[in-house]
Length: 236
Image 1 (cartoon, rainbow, N blue to C red):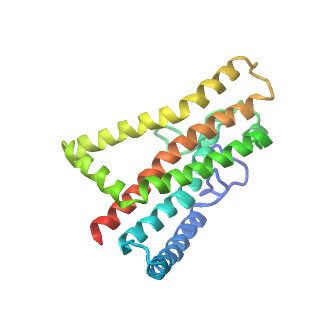
Image 2: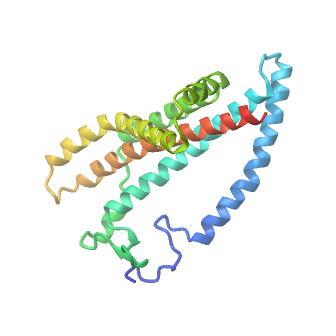
């Protein structure tokens, strides 16, 4: 196989081996579950102390929605951004039918694969999008009234498991395209005006990748938050 010299056979484009990523996942699960339980108990006690008319299920739903907005959303965004960049700049991917890694774009310079640092203005815009995205996920997937209404609407148009899955994918794709379209059109227009060897292309391509990754990660994280709240509503 063709790969980076000295690379670990289980190396991932993120720089972490599969064993390391598995260990991190296990630690996150074993630490995250007790943290959620303690937060739930604390939230119920605070709601009682402040005399808030909030059920324990609603408290749990808010915590799970916060988990989706504050943890899942930024992590998914970071991962998708790197995946898009690695695919575009020839990261090691399995060759079709071979199971061995190969360089999809070996003609590109090796140092071009490094993610460019955003400008100050772009960094501010991204930070605002991350914060607003987290607030939106929590606001849309936290209230059990919204979760119940969406579940009821889904049951009304339910056709079958396969058809419902296809419909959900279609709706998610439409939302992703709607969110990513403004940035894509602007960046694509800028790229058409640049020469192939223009040093500014990397920054513009990264901006395009970031905003598409943000749209995708946001929709996925919103779905995760909704499903977590729905599970709390059904099981509690």
